[in-house]
Image (tube, rainbow, N blue to C red; front, side, top):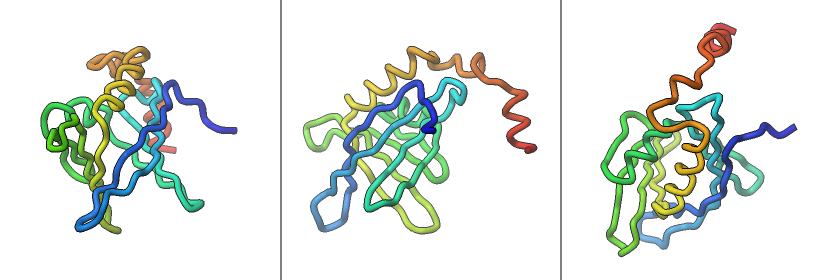
Length: 136
């Protein structure tokens, strides 16, 4: 059975490729109130699914100012005349730079905030369940 997400929308991201046209990718953004700090981004194609999990705050803050430490960085961009959110994902296998329309990301974030307002995430955490998962 497919897990239920409180918010799940498909957005089009563009993979920025050096010396080539950007490649459009459908990405499912997912959010569960029971994991209030995390956003899941599911990339699907050619029978392969790759999921990245990162802080919701990286999307929220990245729309207006650069943020990130580690494998995920986000920053705003307006170079195309459209407000964009740039997302850099790094792994041992390589790096990808993606661009998203900020309006799509805001729509997703607004929907997540109907379940868990920003800054109130700790009120929705089940600490005992989280510790059990970590120790399990």
